[in-house]
Amino acid sequence: MRLRLFGVLLVGMTTLSGCYLSHVTAGQLELVSRRQPISALLADPATDEKLRRQLELVRQARAFSVNTLRLPDNASYSEYADLGRPFVVWNVFAAKEFSLEPETSCFLFVGCLAYRGYFEEELAQRRARELAARGLDVHIGAVAAYSTLGWFDDPVLNSMLRWDDDRLVETLFHELAHQQVFIPGDTEFNESFATFVGAEGLRQFRAARREPPPDRLRTERERQFQVLVLDMRARLEALYATPLEADAMRTAKRQEFERLRADYRKLRASWSGYTGYDGWFMGELNNAKLLPVGLYHQWVLAFARLFRQSGRDWQRFYEITAAWATLEPAERSKRLKALNSGIQR
Image (cartoon, rainbow, N blue to C red; front, side, top):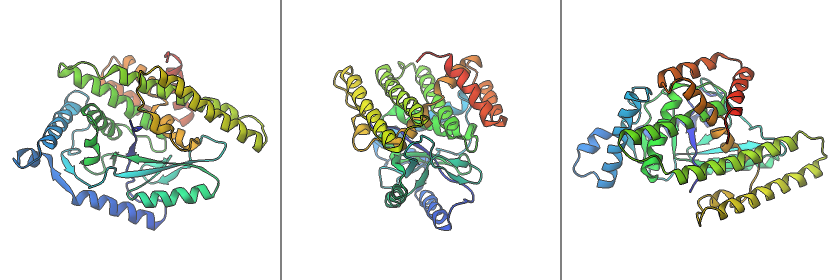
């Protein structure tokens, strides 16, 4: 299993170099040139049967997202684009050697993001090498889906159809949630919110189709993995706050990552042979590799409680969440922490 990553495509003018802006513009033009209406593909008898079934599922999920989840009613995910590659974007994450604060890239309209995305893997690799040369911890995450926050009508991508049905539907709801509520510069808030909407939306979608809940065993394994990594983050944050000399800090950091691998081996032993997260633990583990897990799941439990407090009313839930966009970041974080603290992991 590959750790799921989603992306917010950079929209509007950027404060970064003109070269990077040209790269993003070229990538967006590629997406536009390859689009085909889903309705036309469904009506075409020559459409591959597997693709037809997946696009029909997309059509049904999109209708559910509007009628039940109250997500934006627009032309997003009414078209399909085959890019001829397994991923659409590669996100580059970076953090200092003794910090879990991400190195950010700032843009108009979307604010500062905890990563920078590239439509070409080689450009992402080049950026990663540049950051590593500065002494930063670096990680590249391959992205199969993205959102333009409603600035453009986002298409369904071939990279999204590599997943099973549940993940496909959950991803659609996740990306549409970014169009519903988005706070510039607060990546953890945005991604945790969208992750919750995706998961709860999938549960309700399956229930409406008289299907059993999503695979609880897979969900529980994912939750256990998230807790494992988030606990590791908490230990590292405490470590980095201590006044150790650099060499001692480096040794302690290495020991924490060794502990993480050992803890994972113990957890995997309880999974009856399931090895889906082995790939994540292959290669180097560093601060940057921990960032996506914290970004996408830090406040999911808080949003789950807020949804219940909203009477499980989607519109009310969105209104409350959107109102938090007007709060100072410290106050917003305080409220999320209060919600999180009331939930047992």
